[in-house]
Length: 447
Ligand code: S3P
Image (cartoon, rainbow, N blue to C red; front, side, top):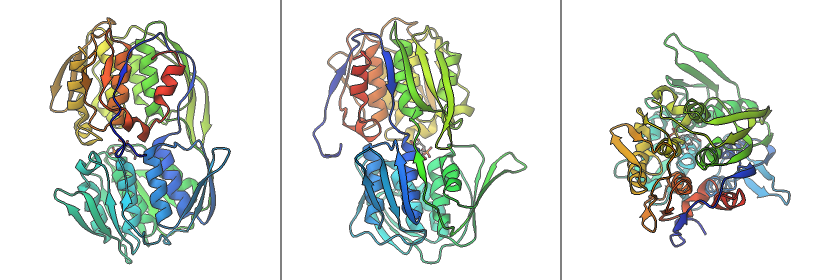
């Protein structure tokens, strides 16, 4: 059952003991989405090991099936994707249900835009509040037509075009989803599609498009912006992909181990792509003991095991320049800051207001209820930490997650460093990105 149709599942999180042992976090969500999409566009069979089997990725898989790909889980846990070839996606028979997943929605809109396909995209209450104008603008320039719910939101109908135009698009927001939507539209567009990225964002799309054999170049212009050029209508070659562990999922265990006294854990196989891994640098600057062990390359991405020990943290001012490289990690960074000595200041976080929830407002409310000292600004939070003293916790009073998996997991971690525990109003959304989160917390001895 998907998280939007089953009843809410409240849960109180309270510490049982330190986190110990070895923990293997699930596959990277961003890479998992892209491996299904590109596999579905290659002619032949792509094998994916370590795919994240979370609801968001399953929404992508269902949509690609509805448009003609064959996607199956094997007995050994690998996934096989038999693709249709670039330009050969089929008209889906019914609406494409994106559940909670903004990444599925925006990237698939890109794919559909350059096919003569009409598709209706629907999603849950959280996704239906999120802005789609950021992809509608460039994809309209490609030639797609859109009918949307007021405000450019879901439900929406896209009419893709049989005659797509290669565009040159300068990103007005630092968003890998927008970049990827334009590049994926460019796949079935004759000529060269260009994306100009003034602020670098996660580069999984570029890496994987190249891996599948697309002609893609990246240069830097005179102003320092990244200029990505993709030559359209390549023949993509099927790949064997190993998905590294998701640093955004590892983040919850890293912070839990830092703030729960006596913890000593190894997180295995964590993706450390520099466009994703800024949280670990910020936590080290706060005094966190995080060592990289056995660095290696998995699926074309840098990976290591992370050895994390409980640490006395101190507050920092987070440089807004690192925001894109840890954009999903702020909820759990706020939790670390709430336990640190002194003040942590964050700014430049406007994009957090349009994630699965308004994460600035949601974390302000949740941490305040849990006893932390937090001030909300227009573009961030200022947190005066407890200096390692456990928070009071929210006890039986539930914090509100607004269908946001990362608010739920961040506040579960806060519960482990509190006297009365933290009650999370609904743990269902955790299954969108990290179905085994609670199981692994229990296995590590923590909750
Ligand atoms: C993602 C990009 C980011 C991130 C999201 C996944 C991706 O969103 O927050 O969880 O896979 O491209 P934006 O592109 O909106 O920054």
